Length: 261
Length: 318
Image (cartoon, rainbow over all chains, first blue to last red; front, top):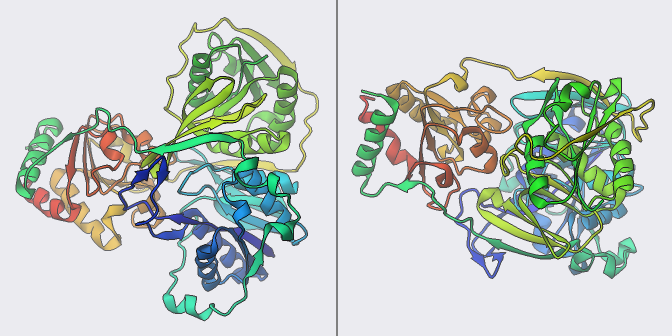
């Protein structure tokens, strides 16, 4: 089975205090990491090919530094990687990204295309399904299990409230992968070093034959956007004091509200 | 029409609350609201929609018992073409994530997802969205377009109250569905209930990414034991396999309402908050003073949870 996985570098924000400068995120102190959902997708693809043969190709869109995300995926066991790298792509909305990816992917002969459910930055959860429409493929989102078979793949989709469903898609198909589907393997620095000489295909706008006005911010559905830190609002009553005092106060609240002795 | 078209959502014989929230948002935007309900027996689900939408189109076909985007899309596309709404709105749910981008892609319509607020700004849709795991808010204004597709975050709007609109219903029996692809629904799977039901607990000690790794779980368990509490977690902890999925609080896990919810090292993304914000008393411990969890907590402590854990347990004989 020939599998394509879309991967993306995102700023690591889980443990970071964000700073917003003039309506945009200040990236200076943030580390770029593989989007968590994409990491699960790469792992799933590599496992499928380890179990039943085939190859995994990776595709990302980003600047020169984002090549990291491809090296990381190659170290996990992917076989080839392509990098859409061109200033003309910057500021593209999900629909434009889907058109760029579709143009780059067409004729690749993929049986299965995997993306993360969403990315941890803007969390639009759109690009994968939009790509499926561009390519005329069936799709399913929120996969927490994949069972590829002859001519079809059975996808377990996570629904709300601790429920899931199984659906069958004819191949080729596009599936978006939910976090927790597997336990992704550890990637060591040594592992990344081993793949440093693998050639990564570079793709620019000209190679795709896409007109510049059909790309980037010019083609975006978005007129204007800005970021702000969330309003603190009413929020919590913040307890003050040293560690012992904080724990005393917390214990008093637990006793009062929880009826504890 | 220039109004809002809402795509209703139902599962296993029940209408989903998120649909009523979309109707609340649609009515707040103003103009005519039309709801599409596709089901095997839509009449049985129509009652909750009546009085909350102006137009109600009930599409019936035996194969529409469970959601399938391939079966929905031709019907929804026809309705959009006929009604020309300014906005097509649906929940940002497992269904909305499957349907909205496919609809937008096939019709070439602009799409904005997971909105927490929306308004019209000179004929252009302006929305708010939570981004970067709830640590920032995005304000977005779209370029003017005849029709826009959007999905709404669960809980962002109140459900439309009954009697908010006078409803004219129309029943349509579909004789033929026209899927583009042969996607098939196979079955529903209920979640596994393992050792404990966290929804039954009076006190939950809940751990997030900040717990760092499986080796630190016993420390949290020790505090839970000292408090007579049950241990639960946020999504990253269950995803990593540090605690079983049955312990997960949130949209895709369990909704809990204990007397006390003690959140340790949980940043508090929306998906988590949705599962615990109605707890009696919420105490949050996090090292980041701007963590979104402090928005829903009643009491907040900015501290290293590994310093707090043993000292707090001590106070309860742990």
